[in-house]
Amino acid sequence: MFSFTKASPNKAPSLPAGRNKTPLRSPLDLVFLSLQLYRSNFWLMIGYTAWLLLPFAGYFVLSFFPEQNPIVVTLDLLCSVAEFMITFWTGIILILIVNALVEKQPFDAMGLKKYSKTLLQPTARVLLLHILLVLLGFILLIIPGFIAIIWFAFAQTSAVLDGKHGMEALKFSRSLSEGRFFSVLYRLVGGPVLIGFVYSVIVALIISISGAAAGVDPVKIAAQNQLPAWLDLLQSIVEIVAIPLLATYMTLLYKHLRETRGPLVKQETVSPETGEKIASSMTPRNET
Image 1: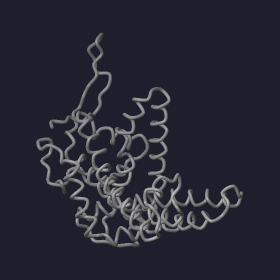
Image 2 (image 1 turned 180 degrees about the horizontal axis):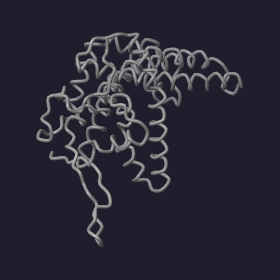
Image 3 (image 1 turned 120 degrees about the vertical axis):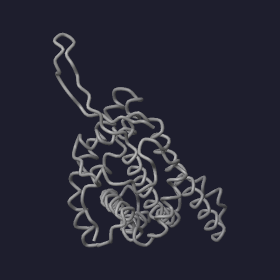
């Protein structure tokens, strides 16, 4: 079964990258690694994201009823809550699966579900702190909000894989980008953009083929403010297929950044008046 323990920071890197001496892998390289891992375990990962078909099917059925109906509004809200909860839980499971596959741990479905449930509350608290800090950054100034998004992008992953809690998870996530902020930003944005581009192409093909089969101009379909219910459902199915690939990429990126993170260096703060040490801290030193 999966060995559901905190990942050891001293373990040899699973991704071939020399610690602090080799440049970070490119987004394209990480996407190919993610695709290879995903393709080899496609049905395993899809088996969990397929739960999203439940709220998506709910949206599809509700689309045939008046939007202003109070019952329809309530049911639509319940579907949204269900979608969020399933996505959140599935995200935790996919992170655990990718980590276990990279570490070559055997698979146990019951052990995976049981362990993932223990991570729901601590990961949810980290997510809440993440959202609050990002919102605070946007309220104060726009730029701090964007910086907070990058700093804390891996907070939930650190809670799942390394057992970080609360502010500890946020601080650990921030440490992954210290000394290489723009390199991390490039990989954090580049990979999802590549995956999103492929997703958009596939969706466009579906619209074109479906429109042609139905005798409808695909351009007119794309110009509509809201897609037809059946086409929206098809798009949701493609989304279910794309989610595991994105989760795989983000997990591999997290592990790669953690493995190439600079060693911790002890820093001491000395009083300028007395010369006595008044504080000490551990900060990562990056040599890349």
